[in-house]
Length: 220
Image (tube, rainbow, N blue to C red):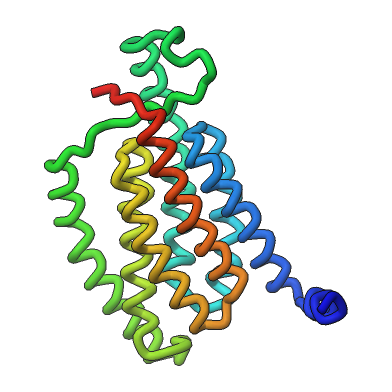
């Protein structure tokens, strides 16, 4: 068993090692998300840079491009998390959070949800069409429905990241649904390390829900 494991790792090329590195950094990112620290956004930038190479190599084009969106949102998230922390301190005071375990969150705004959905749905169809045409012209799809799954996961991830930056609890449920789909897609595509990473994401998201519910304080 040990010899087989050693032989496996010895046979990995640079892309295999990059996938493992992206998995490790990605798991650390979700751990920071559970704790809701600003550091998560800096790790998000690193994770996104690694994933650009991993997804591009495996022909997940929209998931490659969306990493740029993550990097942009990371800079917004750094500012947004600082702002909500200051609001929480102003409302509850430092004495309400002596151990630093409290998580400042906002109630979900259904108006925001409505316009987000209004943008996300047409964005999915437009992106899926573009990816399908590109895949048919270049023969890059690993399986026929890949452009649609790629587009759905990409657009859903954009929504999830935006909701995270707004500190909405519901972002965890979005990620669980998307991660379940992503695990299946990656296993089918032979990206087993990335699939393992998303399995860890699902488990950690459950802990995230628990932590935010237990330690969350609303600032609105």
